[in-house]
Structure formats: C-alpha cells, structure tokens
Amino acid sequence: MKLKYIKEDLRFVKALFSPFKPFGLSFYFGKVAIGTPYFLPRKWVKNKDKPWYLKAIPRKFGFDFVRLGWKTKWSEKDFRFEWAPMISFVCFNRQFVISVRAPHQHHYWEAWLYYEYCTDHRLPKWLRLRHCRENFPITWTVYHKSKETWETDREETIDYYTKIIKPKYLV
Image (cartoon, rainbow, N blue to C red; front, side, top):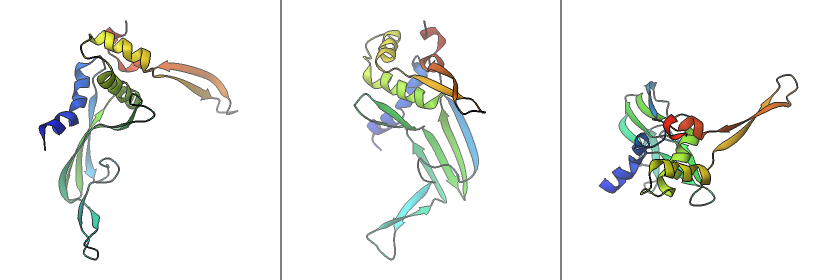
C-alpha cells in the first residue's frame, strides 16, 4: 500500500488537533455482527461453477481497516458523512472491533470535513472555524410532538457547533 493512501486513510486523526472536541473509541467483541462498512467481513473467491465470477464468503480469519466514509452531495463543499473509521479483526466466527465515535457524529464529521478541505490552512484555527461556521452552518430545528395529540407542541433550534467544538473556540 502506498504511503499516500495510508496518509489519506488516517487523515481523520487530525481532528484531535483541531478545534473539534476529541473523538472517543468504542470496542466490540463477540459473534461477527459489525459490517465493514456495509457487509459483514467477507472475502472474494472464484466461483467454481462460473470461473469468470467472484463470490463472497464469510471471513473466518482476517483484518479490515475502514477509513472515514464520506461523499459530496450537491457540490464539492457539501459533505455527507457515511460511516466512522474502524478496525475489525475476525478469527473463527468471533470479531473484535475498535470504532471511532465522535459526539453528534454526522454533524461532527461533516463540519470537520469542511474545516479540513475547504478552509485555508495558513490561517489560525479560530479564523478557519469562523469561516466554517459562516459557510457551512449546522443549525437544525427539532420539532417535539405531543404524545397525546401528535401535534407539534414546541420546537428547538440547535447550533451543533456548540456541541462539537472545544469550549475555548466558542467565544
């Protein structure tokens, strides 16, 4: 694997040194149950009936590294989070997974991607963050419904930057 790809795969670690709150790790050990990212761990082998096709079989032993999954939607600056980075190790129908868990994960990674790819790295962090907040707002309105009537009884507007940014950068 080329160094360029390894560097890009681990780029998410830069979030630890940014104005964003540090992410945590979660651990899983048990039966194979966590996809990497869409399917359970598997490997591709030649199909004996149709040698020009490959078929997927469950992985009995192996290692998967899943990088931060994201895409752009409507423009080059409209980021969408898809899955968190993880490391998966499978051995005899048991799986050990270390997953990255960020606070308010979708908002966190989408804002961090904008911060990382669309702001000028020569500027100080606080100025890059200001640019991020002005040009990539993550303010959502949540409607709370009454359990009895199912009508909206109150609404709440949340600026997720206040939940994902380190307090010293919120001035």
